Image (cartoon, rainbow, N blue to C red; front, side, top):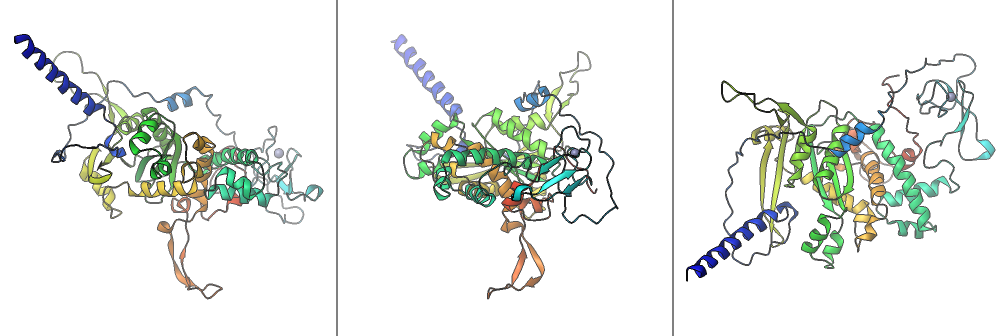
Length: 478
Ligand SMILES: [Zn+2]
C-alpha cells in the first residue's frame, strides 16, 4: 500500500514538473501560436507594472557582428582630400560633372565627388552614356562606371523597368515573362542591383538621429497559412528554426526603414539587427526601442547599449562586488506583448523593460502616441506587397529563398528613397492647380529619407541605379 501511495505521489510530481517545463518551453506568446485551451479560459493574471530591477550580467553579451567587424582589416580612413580644382580658363563647362568622381585607383582624386577634375567628353561610338575625362590622371571612364547599368547590352529603359517591376512586388519569373528574358538573367540583374542598393543604403544611412525605433520580425509563410496549406502552429514550428524571418527596424516618426534583414528567429539574429541599427544611428543616439514580446531583444539591445557598472559594497569589508553589465541609464525599452487565443487578440500588454513606463510614455506623448508597434506592423504589410518572395506568391518554403535577401536590399532603397509616404507628406503653402480637371494639388510628397533629412528630393529608380556610390563619405558643404 505504502509503495502504491508513494508511486502515485511520484507520478503526480512528475506530471507537475512536466506542466511547468511545458509552460516555460512554450513558444513566445507574441507570435500568436494556437494554444487551443480545452478548458474555459482561466482569468487573466494581474501582473504588477513594476518589474524587479534588472540585476545586470556578469559578462558582456557576445555579438558575432561586432566580432566580425573587429576582425576585418579596419576600413582605411579616407585619404586627405586633394586641393580643389577651380579652372577659370576657357568656356564654362556645359555638362555638370559635380556628382561624379574619378574611379582610377592610381589617381589622387579618386573618390572625391565634384572636385573639379572631371570634364565631359561626348558619347563614345554613339552609345547612350557619356564619357568623362579626369584632368589629373588623364583617364577616361563612362558615367555609368560602378553602377548596375555599366557594361550592359540590354537597353537602360528595359533594365530600369524590370527592376521597377521587381521593386513593386512582381516575382522574378513574372518579370522574366513580361520582359521576355530568361529568369536567370533577371536573377543576375537583381543580384547586381541588390549589391548596388546595399552600397547606396550604406552611403546615405549613417548618423541618423531618431527618438524611437520599432523592431519587428515577420515570417514569410503567411500566404500558405492563409490558404490553409499549413496550420499556423505547423508554420511556426517549421519557421522558428528556418531562416525565413524578415526583420525590420524603423523610425515611426520619419517612417525611415533603418534595417531590413532576413534570418532565423534567434538571439544571434536579433543582435545582428540591433548591431546594424546601432551603426545607422548616430553614436550618441540612444532612442526608445519598442518591440513585441520576443525575449531575445533585451539581450540584443543590452549588447549594444550597455555599460559596466560597479555595484556598491554591501559590507564595509571584503572585496568589491563584481562589476555588472547594465543597460545604459538613458536607454528606454518597452514591449508590446500581445496575447492571442483561438486566433483572436484578447489582450495587449505594455511592459517597460528598461526605464520606467512613465519615461517611455513621455517620449511617445511628444508625438501624441501611446505605446505601440503599429507602424512597423503597417510596414510589414508594405513589405509583403513589395517583396514577391514573401508576399502572395510564396507557396512553399524553398521557393521564397530565391533572391529574398536581394529583394529586401532593393526594397530597402525603394521604400526609403523612391516611394513617397502619405503619412510624412507636407502641406503646400498654396494649393497648386493641376493640368487636367483634377482638384488642386495640396501636398508635397515626401519619402521617409526626406523626412529623416537624408535627401531633399524623391528619387526615381533610374536615378538610384545611375548613382555612382563614392567609396567614402564626402565632406559636407564643399
Ligand atoms: Zn583621375
